[in-house]
Length: 162
Image 1 (cartoon, rainbow, N blue to C red):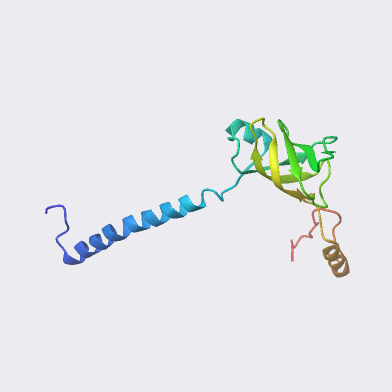
Image 2: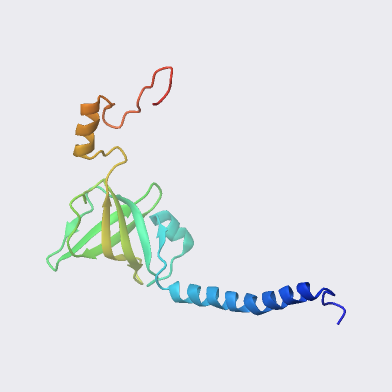
């Protein structure tokens, strides 16, 4: 066998690699197969439209709740529109909405599109804006003299941040 190394140590290493590699590939393949149903991709409405997300595929849909779109039906369903800059998607949700949910705010909905292109949400997460600071942190920063206003960037002296 001319293709095998002449060194006994090299042949042993090659044998170990040849035995371990298929086991490792099988383990990774089984892990990915097992996780395929729990993977949830995040899309904006425009990305979901461009990707052609299949009906029934579980995803996360994120964007802003369009102003004037929230409608609470008598059957307990809440209908609203999630929009980004270029597209919008109608959403139906049954359940209690988060306290921060309101028109014009960011939202992430987990669920799937139905055959008619309506997103049936199972979970709604409302997002606050990036300038949000908890009240306790605001008080602590004011007490330390480090408060720089509502989301304003701190102005450091010539020495930079300390």
